Image (spheres, rainbow, N blue to C red):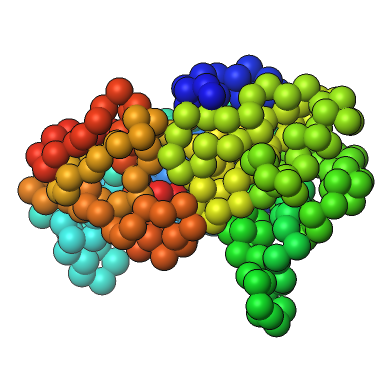
Length: 393
């Protein structure tokens, strides 16, 4: 059995970033930029008004003749002369000859006469060309995760397609003669395939592409064919169940027969000790436990790290210091992941139990919004102790 940190290091070391692809920007949410983006123009590309008001040229007088209006999208071709004013809308192109915009609230208008009530500073309320971004500026660095905010920035600069790293294709093989699908009849000894649906959702939520969630019978030859077929079309193959040492647990035998390079078979954690990680022709394989909470936990702590690395993301979570609101025990002295509720009180985060931590308890994780980690060297955490935790995504 290896430690959790060792397992993550081995996974990251054996995972490569996938190749690049060019995609339409609206299809790039949560992808990672695979190129530097430079501005091919100034932003804004012209001087413009910061608000609704009047464009004027500062002089010694307080009265101006209003000679027209500039709407957003219009352009005033002539040069504005001293003593003249143009009504101007927010975002409209600033006219030649003017040097300031005075807002509507600070003037009186009588017929076509503009009367300024207060002193105006030169350059007031004018957004200058290139003040946000200049031509050839580096706008977004390679490795940036694309969010809706970056989409807007790219669109403002005229980029409709960008290079991003591909997201992995993931095949799910859920093993067990006891399984029936979601609409199947629950005869004696049968259970529904909840793991297939949980893992499918987890893969999708991580940014990868779930290709299937097939139920595979407890037959070594059938499992071998299913795994080989899955490797043909996937970057990652995940099995759930069949990774332990029972009479019908064939995952390790199959990996040995096909010549996969098994990196480890067990991790010193709870829930989820029996975990197989292997490489096969540059593809990755994860054999997850069959118990629902164990399967989800192993995916969250380990499989997701490989997916992030493949996509060019940082393969780690952001943890926070939380205060134990209940007592937590580590009787088996492994790294334990407790699924909890994290609440904020007076600027501090507190972790409370959300249910039993049995490895088949889907209700507990459904009741939880976060988790805490008890390292194997920590035997007990008491109320008031600080511990590492994070919110679930």
